[in-house]
Length: 221
Length: 123
Image (cartoon, rainbow over all chains, first blue to last red; front, top):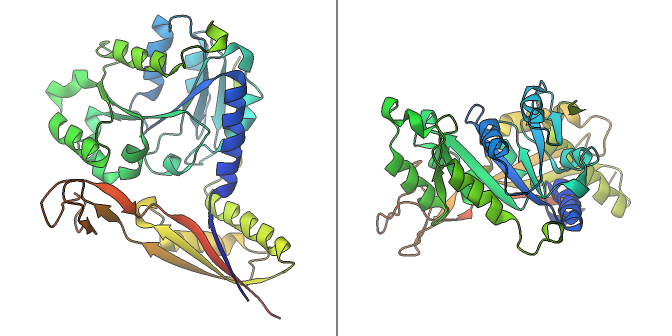
């Protein structure tokens, strides 16, 4: 006997992501999911925001890594609520892990929740975490050919950050080719040029984050 | 103080999610054993067929899919050109429209992750 099903395979993850999203709505939290390869500078980009503050916007952070609490320790120095998820070799975060992490965060005191996904350009893309926006980060040492190699990430990102632009004089990275590749996959998606070490573009990144906070948010009123 | 959540290794998350989904459908149809599962997966999801089948074999014991065959249909990438609307399967990693040479386009096929159908054992 044959039964036609036609369901998404990751339906369970999508269902939990809906609950997570409802929880964010309830607490008026805007959630950002940061995806990149390992070492592209996701943690540094979060630190660059925490260093200068975000115009009264209260930030919480979820760190995803296969092992260690190093990233969460880096974030905890800025005295913001942070939860570390260790996936024990797992290559991506899932919505049920975010749901567990929410139990450990003071949701009443958070306006912007930044999730740093496990460093990986493939696996995290298929797993909705209940986020409002997705940030793709690429550093100039990785090469300009990333968009066509990992089109799903660039198709679903709300913003692309090209990090470590201070290294451009030393690496053969073709910014034009990269930009054309990103826009061939998703026309018009903003691309920010940032150097966390030198400070270039950090204010644009901060402005974009502030712009994600819905005006009229009761918490900030 | 840093709050820490540790999870089990979940490289198999897609398979375990799939098996849970199939078990739910078995319950709904009051069946115990599945003989075949058909999945439709887009090439852009970067699923390695051999690894996927191997992991399925390792995970299925003691579940309703213990004796099931897994049929994976891989859907090739299909792009629609934004300039001339031609639909094509890219031959190269750079998506180049064969009609007007425009680079890139809208993905219209290749991102599926669908449990298509299940066959129950009639025994």
